[in-house]
Length: 248
Picture (cartoon, rainbow, N blue to C red):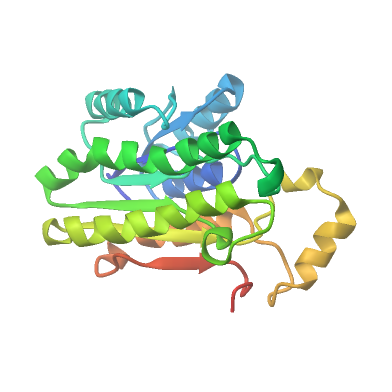
């Protein structure tokens, strides 16, 4: 029996990186997957085919989670197409790094909107469904930066710290209806984006991590799988660090 057999998940920002890894692991474990993407139609179509080949229902939606109306519409579309929603993974996120003295107001606002307001939008959009069926798992993607801060990332750190506070509050609000809310805080995860970085710098980062390596999208996805499945039915309001011991 697969861990997510017969369940439907919405994953935001899944056309690449961590979101893509989560979609793949969920589909391998029997989940039907509705995912959003922002711009890459090609990557979305490719992922859709890959997931369908695993024998599950999968569909990509071009949707901006930072837009409240689009988030509400997305949930309506998914309910119409899939009939149910059991898991929400809020993964969509961006960075616009700069020292505070050089950061524009727009760069601050945009990161808060995409990373944090999207979590409010999507959680509010699925809440009624979860409360009605008296079950649901919400998994929000934060970051080690949201826990310890990072120079040059005040906007990103604020958005990711906000996700932790939001998730704990939702866990308290919805717990009596068996709706769970948890956070994953990834550390240095190696994706297409990090592949463009200077190799020597990456080696230095790896050396500073107790497990002496960067994480993979699958490392994050496996923890996500635990939180999405009934194996974690008594876990809510928690932040799980997937960082190789970086913050130990």
